[in-house]
Length: 100
Image 1 (cartoon, rainbow, N blue to C red):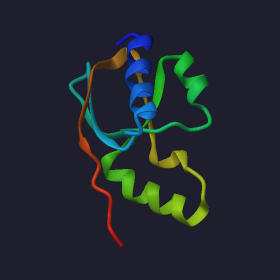
Image 2 (cartoon, rainbow, N blue to C red; image 1 turned 90 degrees about the vertical axis):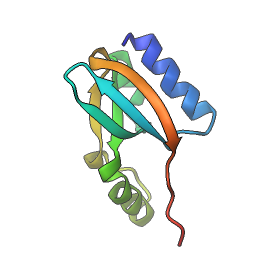
Image 3 (spheres, one colour; image 1 turned 90 degrees about the horizontal axis):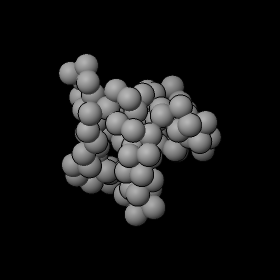
């Protein structure tokens, strides 16, 4: 997808407060990711390159737990997706949050 398309979709979700929606990212190489986009300190720099940090759903629990312990987001749990490899982005459902 073009940089403007991807950035607009992601930023619209942030502005609407829905950044924790489960997102399906369908890529050209027949890989589909489920999880959510997240804005780290390198968001603007990556966006200029049409790249975006994505937290795969299988990493989301560890990502949130580490944030709760240390108060900082750890990029270890993220992957970088190149916008040019994306065929489609679909926001499929609200992410299930654990109740304590």
